[in-house]
Image 1: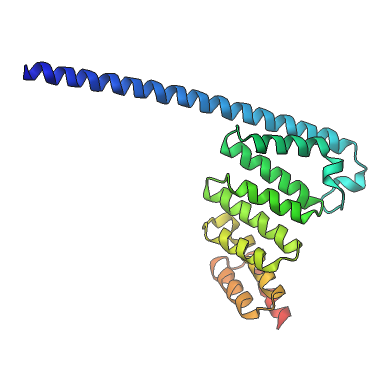
Image 2: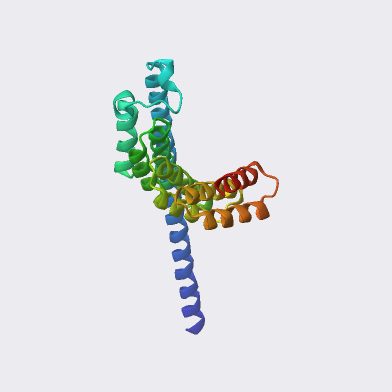
Length: 215
């Protein structure tokens, strides 16, 4: 009886393992399909953007031109917002869509809308690189919007992600906004950290020059 009970228990466990494996397999299939559909939607939106951009005068195509993004890229903005509001795509696709929208606003000097879009994208960030990138872009948007305290918070939050590839730009941003907040001591501290961690880099040289100029 004891052996029969053990065999039955093992068989039951085996069935559970198989069922769990099947469940994981189908869940992965659904996730993969969801990812592919999201990427296809984002690709379609990119094509829409390219079509709308073709209709702009050359002077309005380059980043730094002040245009009404919602009017000039109405279909692109609508499709991006539709993808984001539906929230049926994967987190990676939603992150990319929000960063695309935020960058579009940022490129054309609509900083408050850029801030809103980038913040929504930060919620979908999974990797440290995504989190740091979102906070860097948020810092740039806040800085350009002259919200220097918020910009400094964003840059420091990005630094906390410990992504070496973005450290230079994040620290340089922190130096800039610290000076704009008239906190020369904090700017010097960030500059010293940059010089120590990335000695000889363009970012370190730029930060040192800013601090010297402010003295």
